[in-house]
Image (cartoon, rainbow, N blue to C red; front, side):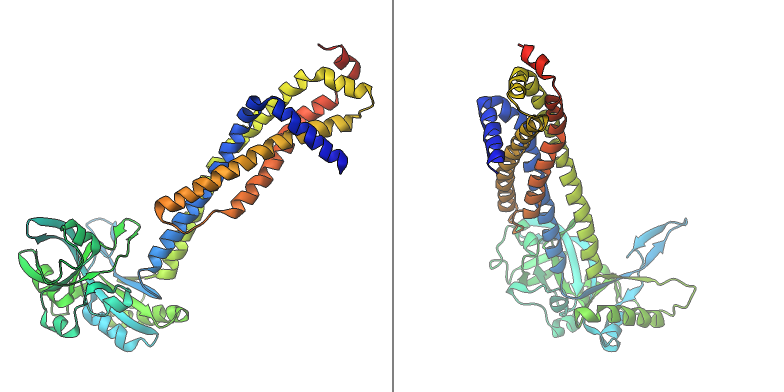
Length: 412
């Protein structure tokens, strides 16, 4: 143990003798370690944020979408492009699917919302009072519209926070005022709590109105089959009941729409858990790519360590010859230079960890995340530093150990 400590002290002294050269050599390792820790923290923070936003959509959710419309050619226009779901479908699901707790049909359209001299283009969503329960979207101020207002087709609205800001208002100040949508006046009875963005959609950039009002006054869809809707959000009774709810909804809609094999379903059901899983998978790949890209600079740092160790061997050839002449074995020379490379690499790693932790804390503070620091990345990085020292210091150490003592003594 004493011999090892002496070698570490000797290696440290050698590094301090050439401080600037040692620091420049470690720079690649420092940047590499800091980048790996910061990038892994960034990736995981984004993953946690996305997962949190998906969960904010509601609990135990299933999304039933209309099917895809078919154009003139064989290409499909994508899910939701056809009008295949109705409000009656939503009511049938609520009444006949035991695993379902509540449903909220939705019919949406982008429109201009005007208040005094300000206006904004936003998404108008027509739904039912159960929207607040299913989507966990409670009013921040005011109240949600009720069943009586739904039946009457009342011209009432709740504004998302982005819409409130775009109209130059406050959540309290906009209550009781009238906004105009396609020339129709709607009384603002509430504002929605802040939800944030999911993917490319800002959940706060929307206006909620009763579904009957939406169909009669804005969209004009009120066919004999019932009010057509774009989608139906369904809340299962428990997380364990989601599979049963999906099965019951599928069979019920097939019966209602008279779908028999080999005809394909004219609707699509998406599971919230599947959306979270897919998001986590994408975020995991994103994190791995970020970490892998940053790790390349570690290899560059390792090459720098090998280069400086080869220079060190050349500069200290006479020292190696003297040590061999007074009894040092090849293994002693090998260990000396190998430990020196490992100390150089590990010192750079420790500085890189400090820089990476600082960068991670700054990232969390800048984005308001609570992801913390990727401590496993810290551990792996330090371990990788030791491997870099062994791998890239191995060749210079072997070269030093194999020097001919007589030739080394004659060198200048």
